[in-house]
Image (cartoon, rainbow over all chains, first blue to last red; front, top):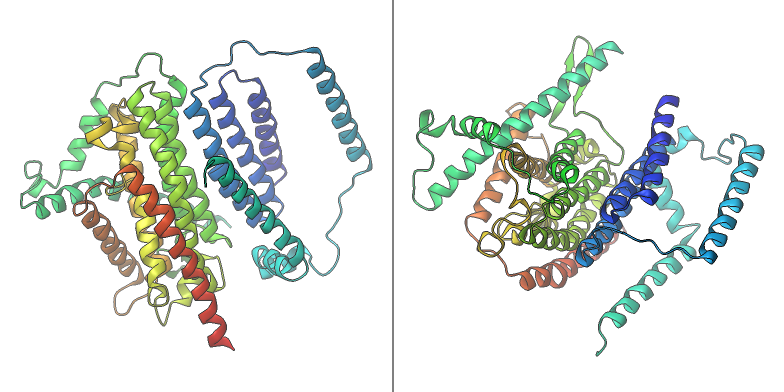
Length: 167
Length: 328
């Protein structure tokens, strides 16, 4: 299991680096898909099969297909000259420092925590983690679930309004 | 532990070999059925009634010159056909193809792995099939290939929604995502009786997912030569075909498992029942292909979004209502 974690970690970091260093946008997008697969691997290792499958179904199977489609439609074959200005560099450096600080804080203060409450790993595996997630979404977190769905609905109507100028 | 490992490896080898062999012989079956429908004989020369034709075709494709167009992205060009085959073959890992059998005191389930999110696993892999086609179309550096790739991408994204929603009724009735549980739930009555609309929706949407006639605008011969695989030759071309036919076998197996009771049936051994049902679903796919003409691009999009999708949603709502009424 430990070995698998390191393999997935290596793939995730390698592909994430390739996403930002590739000149060809389509290759970048494909490396991002590979990165999603590595993340799905992590979820499986954490006994979260539902999240792992959703990661592939939604991100790799739907969102990235649209991204690839847009890249193909616009026919951006190569980025030759990348415009960088002074502000971008400053903002980039600040974000990098903040992220690095966060990682240091997490690794220093973080320790392995067992899940609290009645939902231990064995209980979740017995019921099935899809069922546990479903139960929570429709009992304890109904309000936030419904708000999220209304938000998505608003986004759909918004996209429709933008796409169709005359109604 | 060792026994388990050996059993698992043997199962994987059987499924792998079986899928590749059936994909090869499906080409013969398709040509024979097309010939039957069009009142011809079909392949007759190689072997008895053309029985060695797939092997002859395979050898021929293997020795053909491998042409990669100039200015094509070589790596992606070769990667694309492989990306079509891998999801198609991997999907079969979660499909139970027979009742558990007893070998030397161990119970061996005839299923490579029983994932507790089986249906979602199948849907996730189906959604990846589009990459091979799109990347192949893009990497070929040809306008026909690019057109075919873009068309296919738009088509598959639209029909995937109807495909996913058509299965939700099954999940609601079975109350589980694991395919072995779904099969055992159907011991009394097949789910196709409860979900006739879902069955038809899945049949149509999966035909569109496989880019077969009447939904093959991605490779429409009359308009864009051969679409996304215009520039492909030799084994890469063969890989596209293996992928397409393996996908057909896998989709038939999924339909059998979800709607037609899986391996369950009287008298005959379970594996035989499974094979018979898969064979009949494959016949439906072939029959569809040689009966209907190709849809026009806008008709195809209208059909997916304005017809299949609302019916799939209505199917879910009606299923939910009926289930609540019967329970209370």
